[in-house]
Image (tube, rainbow, N blue to C red; front, side):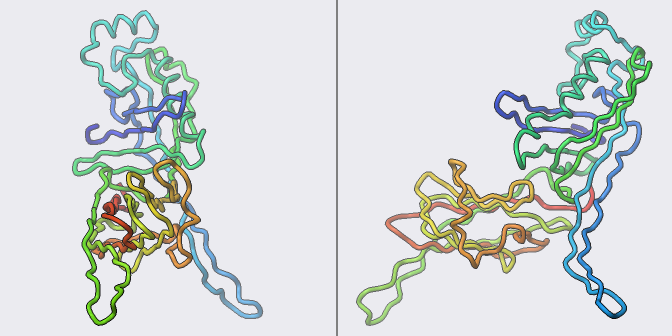
Length: 325
């Protein structure tokens, strides 16, 4: 990608293919004719009327997700537009070395439109509950990403396709109202030891494995930390400042891991085999929906009941979150 371009990606699912489409500028074959319309969802306000008196009582408000609407033109051949398959094949033969990869270029207008609709249909995404696509945007200074699903795809039935030009309106529904840094940050904490207490008692209590570190969330909005506990580990307790704390009542075997992922489009606790482990969270643990961390620097730590050997590291990955791209 380069500044001004957008990129839609999602992974394959079984026999359904994934996609990696770059668009937004003329050389991609899908030129934006207007700046994208970014709409933020209406708030779900929790206020209630006060019976028998004036005014209202404010409750818990919830913010709806955003959506992005693109007004674009499928314009695959530039000023000397070609349309037929024969003309396209000849053009490709001459210009094959100059075709941008991951774009609609190198196709007739009808074929490019068909391909774009197939990508926007996103079979591999909509076939799985919770599965999302990634929508990237690059500016001069940064690349940011939103997570969601392609929605409306509305091409205009126009004779302009004979000149290699078809107007299209396409929507992308986001899972929340944040833009994230495209590259996640990762912090890892390793083991240290809490020494046995000294004194006259002949039998010391079990040793406890300790890990300490810190994480710094930048950005302008709270973000979601994804925490991975690598085995072996016994009854791990993990925390990030006062924002997030949970205890997992299980033994994580060597070579296995458990990942606590509170992001709205994932929101699971699973091990390496994909088995749900959420029922093993202690009742005092922070709810997944409340495991968001505002910008700032926080302690990042873990305690483990120590069994018969060393235990694995704990990692925290996150993407700084912003209110605009």
